[in-house]
Structures are given as C-alpha cells and as structure tokens.
Picture 1: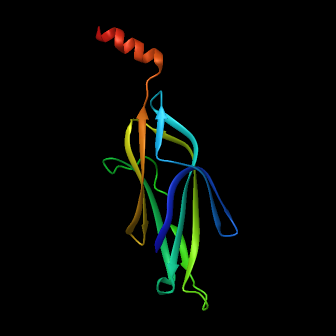
Picture 2: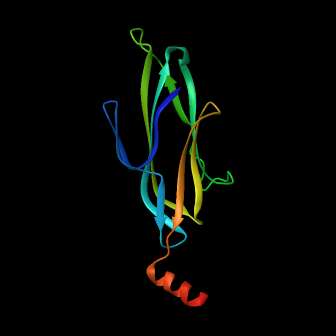
Length: 144
C-alpha cells in the first residue's frame, strides 16, 4: 500500500474515484477547554499493487502524545484488493467523518493508520489553547 494522501480536513467526498478535500488542517485553536470540534473528516487515498491482492484490514487510531486513545478505536475497515489484468495498481479512497471530537487538554495528537497491523502513516494534530482577551487581562492583573 502506498498512501498518496492522508489528511484531517473540514470535509471530504469521493466522486467516481476522485477524492475531493475541503479545508485541510493540522491545528485547532480554542478559547475553552475541553475543546469540541463539531465536525471534520479523515481523508485517505491509497494505491495497491497487483502483488497486494487479497483481503486486508485498515485500522485507524486517534491518540494523544502519550499514545493513549482519545476516542474508541474505529472498527477495522475491510479492504479487498483486486487489480484488473490490464492494470498494475488500483486506487482507493477512504473517508471517515468525525462528529463532536473532544480534546480535554491542549497538546499534540495523531491519527495513526495501519494496514494489517503495520503502521503506514500518521497525521499530526496540534490543539492550542488561546485565551480570550478577557482571560489574558485577568491573568495579567493577577501577575502584577
């Protein structure tokens, strides 16, 4: 498997084999914690060669910097690879929609992608806490 695209985005669609991606990002800025991101998608595009024909399992884990899962693991996605005789490879798009993604603390996170238990890619995500102007003023008052 060769991953051509692995990204976290606002939305993604598959249109007759074309992967359409809207708003790829790697950082979430929030004024409050826990932070809740209302909706986003994981978009993957991968190619498989004719030597990879057969049944496979794609797994996706969303973890924090310590490797702890921040949400229940997705069930494995079955991938049956059949390459037509006239081709040397096939492409597949995978789109996983996420709702109400919750982050308890700021920091580094990742979406880890594996095929048959072997890591293939990792999508980094940074959650940054940006205090509101009011909070910044209160912090400054407390420091003086």
